[in-house]
Length: 51
Image (cartoon, rainbow, N blue to C red; front, side, top):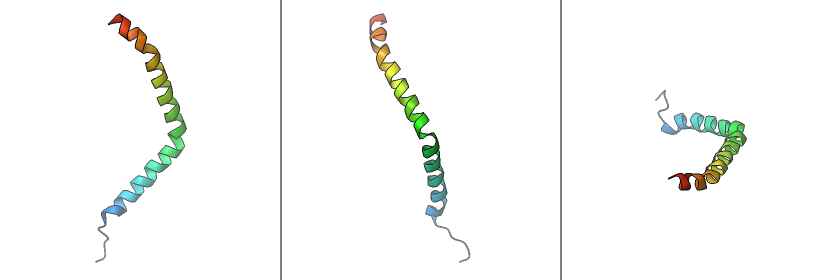
């Protein structure tokens, strides 16, 4: 009775931590993802012709 064995209590700090990381690094991650996707799409014709 003196300890709380609720599984959601362990989940809440993890969820808060992930939210903080997304807020802090979200802009950088989105920029990297867009840059990668743009570079990938520009290389598709080269990849198809060298096949």
